[in-house]
Image 1 (cartoon, helix red, strand yellow):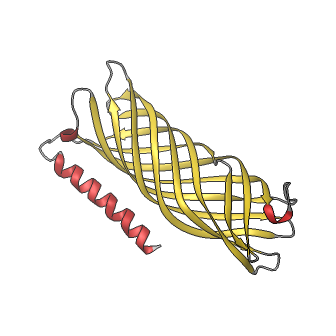
Image 2 (cartoon, helix red, strand yellow; image 1 turned 30 degrees about the horizontal axis):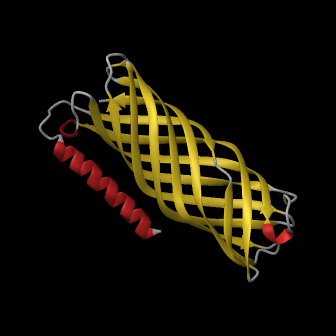
Image 3 (cartoon, helix red, strand yellow; image 1 turned 90 degrees about the vertical axis):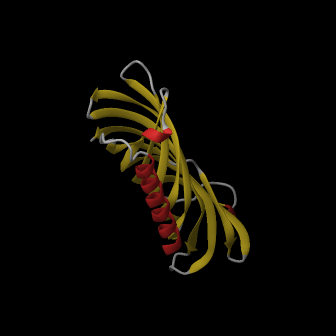
Length: 232
């Protein structure tokens, strides 16, 4: 956990410090804060690994959920031109979705009874974004980010069998959206963020709480947000 967290924090610090240096010639304040939230869709996952000494899969289907987040960043004049404005930011966000169905391969084909639980993810990303300048109040933007995801699984099925654990993993995301200028100090934002946490590991526990194996999967997350960006 410390390795991933240190890596993400170091990445963010380098990104922000280099951004500040690159735009140090400008006296105009170009920082911003961004708050956002909205709908989350966790795509179906198929955890795989060795359970009870045999290779098995635990396929999951999730319903819609929610997410919210904050970001702080800076416009980078030295990395911008007349058509594109470049921004660098640090994002902290959280998402959660409830499980709808679970299919354990060890019990044959078909969904398991007594399904409940959820998956939640806390992300710490360093993002780079590009605003595509227009002659209107609307500004499309796109970008990417990398960092660390802290994933909590608590998926229950059958006689209190659980896929339950907390793990941290390297994560990356793509961002696309648009903003509408409400004033010189405030924008309304609409965007989608698709992220992936790589090789997330979880324990499989039987009804008595004893571990029967470990399963892994890349955890994807689609977030559709509305937000407000404050410029200062």
